[in-house]
Amino acid sequence: MLKHVGNRILGLGQRSPVTRGVLTRLYHERVVDHYNNPRNVGSFDKNDPTVGTGLVGAPACGDVMKLQIKVDEQTGKITDACFKTFGCGSAIASSSVATEWVKGRQMEEVLSIKNTEIAKHLSLPPVKLHCSMLAEDAIKAAVKDYEAKKAKFDGKAENASSEKAV
Image (cartoon, rainbow, N blue to C red; front, top):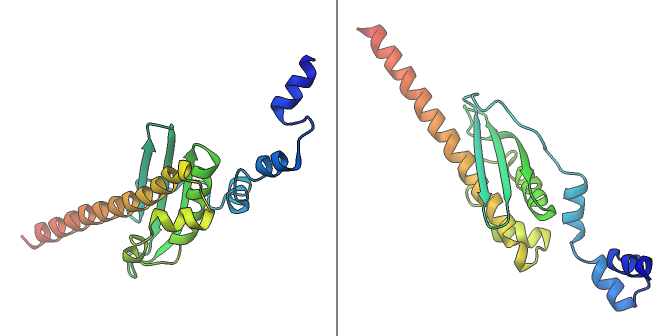
């Protein structure tokens, strides 16, 4: 009896076709693909002046997402992106999609990526929309970090050149 109940809880018991269809369709195939084969996992040196880092989290569910971009300083184009995410499959998939979408685009362009586009692409259910919101916030935070580093670096370069002139 206990074995039978355990199998039913784990989904190993006999199910009706309706139940079977519901259980196998919890996540869209794109979510499963990005979860099983995440793209661009890793990290860059956060002290590199061409790297912007966005670190965001959702205290309600415990998801934490770090998304980094590497920018070509001459063109302003994002040449590479990577992520590390601690969270559910939808959060990992949203991070993976975000890194794919930002590569090769201009900085201004990636700021127009909305969570609704990510959620629609992954067919996220309403209860998982916060994952796509985290991805959007991580992109914006990475761009903001890069711009702050660039301004700081440019400011130091200006100060150094004015000190040499004196």
